[in-house]
Image 1 (cartoon, rainbow, N blue to C red):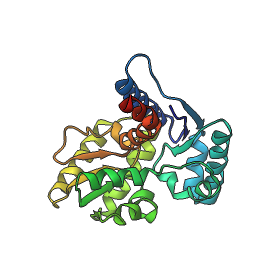
Image 2 (image 1 turned 120 degrees about the vertical axis):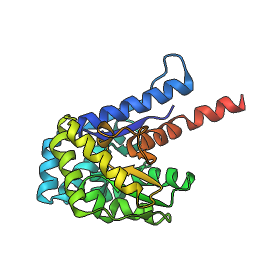
Image 3 (image 1 turned 90 degrees about the vertical axis):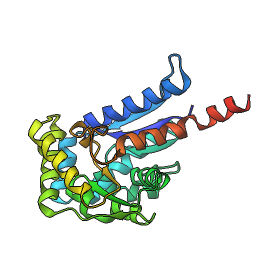
Image 4 (image 1 turned 135 degrees about the vertical axis):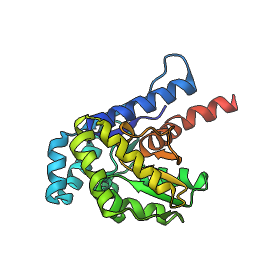
Length: 238
């Protein structure tokens, strides 16, 4: 089994979701007491959040690159970041790594294309919803992103940073997100993408008027595909 390096702590709860998804899927595929070979380099999110608020994306990029090098030195054979927003600063990491880096937006685009979703709504932090670092990787694959009203962008961003990032799931915010998805359904949207690793805490992906794609689960499953690819090929050939 290949060893995966995860850059996490943004937030710790989303990193826990990655660890859970990956190990459950590995156990499902291999059975027995199998679990993943995983190394985690975890940040103090209070520091990262302060850099985001001040616009110090170069500083975040340097921190991500250092974390990736630490994981690579520790034997990781590929790197993922367990957070959508800080992919905005993944350039220095990609430039210095000698091992693969799996971008969360690419895994999401692969899944949307496979499911023939052409018109989707992207929800996440204001950075993810409005800037090209995530959006362009979907649009380059022929996926049309519907516009989100500024009031909703501000509210979703508030829910993420004031509530979900702190581990709080507020019932009223759950209702608001359900209302937003219902409104998007009226715009002939094929699917909603939860482009924030914590949003799944407040949105039931199985109980909505539209298909809901959780980037955390999609990214984690793609990681497992890579981690087990050699082992599963060997089993198939035996």
